[in-house]
Length: 454
Image (cartoon, rainbow, N blue to C red; front, side, top):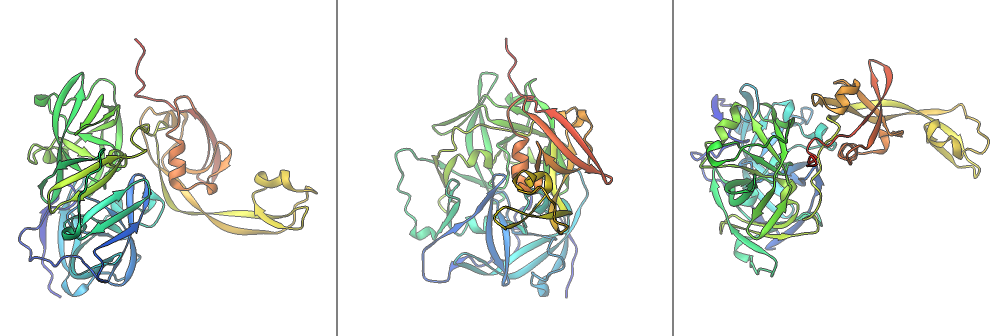
């Protein structure tokens, strides 16, 4: 196998490779002109089922990525076409060094009833890009431009489906409440013009539309355009880039205007770091509109005709919430729990912790029988400085056992995260395991962006 070493600088995840041979397009295999595909929406991210070389996988649909990326989390499973592999090195957002990756050509990929025979895929060996522990379900990769360029892509965030339509068969009959906006492209990524209001000043901005960014807005600070964070902010962990962790200032925006749609008090992050300085140089780009904003619309992307259609949905006026505890958690492996057997009045057997079901047992007697089961281990992986959780003594590596008296077995990862986005002052009681010892902590959620009363 021929192996060459190349170095590419990534600006978000992957830039376009303009020198590569033209690949074929996705085609429907059953004579249809459109197809509807259901998706999961987790942390604002669209998770779609795809098949690569006859293996079923789950990918994030990301309009901010140019080539499909496969994560190295398949435990050695052979997915890619090994005959065309070459080693490359990539660098992207975050504080880190170049990363080794594999560029693989001529892979077969299927999405619903659409198929492509010669897809180039990049496999990246970087645990930080493994979304599985972050989202709580298996995530094998990211796909974006190859889907958007070949179809008109309709995203229904409320009903959780995408509709892929052959461009020549699409009719853009606009409803009365729809807005059609022009798209521009740089490195195959879509941009729109919008307007933000800061300190009572209206500022025009050029923004990347990124379905793979779970935040609402990112803005790049630029004093010359008066895009500067206000005094009402806090320093926060923003997520993982290709080359490491990303940090910045989190605040609120007075308003974001897209065509006739005005969104008030959106959350906004001002990322910092060397890699962000590189992004700011891309054709007057001012930032990113992410999925926390996009999910408030019914969205149609038409790359072929260079436009997007927006229609607000029932999410439009939803509250912008954020983590008020300061805790970031991930699903890190499993823990073993012992569930005892009880006999109820009607003779049924039930397994569960004694603290959960003792009140339902008629004779209050414990049968000497139990079974061992696995439960997800929700581990604290980041703590915001001076946050309520940090100040009471919680530590990195703590494994959460209970929240407000409820075993975390009963929650999905995103449900636990949602509890930390509750109202100002909400009491959180959290039981954790640390070095095989159990500790109980209590704190109250604190809204760091709460407007101070005059």
